[in-house]
Length: 332
Image (cartoon, rainbow, N blue to C red; front, side, top):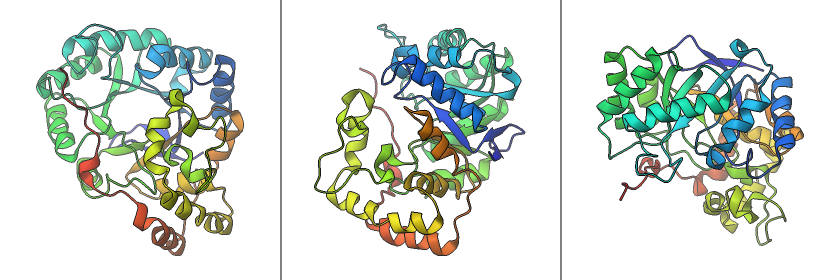
């Protein structure tokens, strides 16, 4: 496993991180989830990403139990706050109340005294940014989190939050966006701004919810039991990539993967890691062998000719519009 600094900080995280967005506590049983976490540890992954909202808070608890007995100092545990975790009007967003209550709940479920990175899961248009950042500062200064990050924030939002973080003497070191060969909306604005500020990307969906594995074929129904057929495991998220035009071009990547001696999934994960502003690529898994396969993308260098050939294939189907950076609607 290779490691990279998170932003302009001293914290090192594994190039491949393990995330449990749609698996732990929902899609797979706990023993299978634990087996995947053990597989991640066995291949040298030390960075684990979750969120309070995943599986209605169950995912954090599953991860906490799976990591029992591990040396805490040897792990980097990342979680997030924003989305609803209860029925009340204040059980969501980035208000001081919700942040303070959420960090305590996350620490209890994760069975730890602190998280290495606490992330704002989306931008909250209903709460003053100053209030949010002051609450994050109190979380850090109390020792409950070491660093602060955001997820799917626009370049201008990252810049404003970073300035406030510096005033408050805390370290905003990361953004967690969607990023893959097919979804490159961060490249025009978010990445240059982040490089200037010393902020890294920790990217999710590097294989485009499974599309870049090549298992979905144009003109054919998705394989039974795959993510595209399971509403609970992200079918809505994968739908944008399921057109015949996209699937046809993805199939054209197979010879390039073979030429590089990689599986399709390894090629996709290695591709995002060629961007030096990316500190880590988050992988998910329902079986340990998927972890083992994807982890082999760490340390892989793709040559310029291969990167050019990939671009020529996917360019017509790649989304690059920076306006597509996800922002939630305002709360009613």
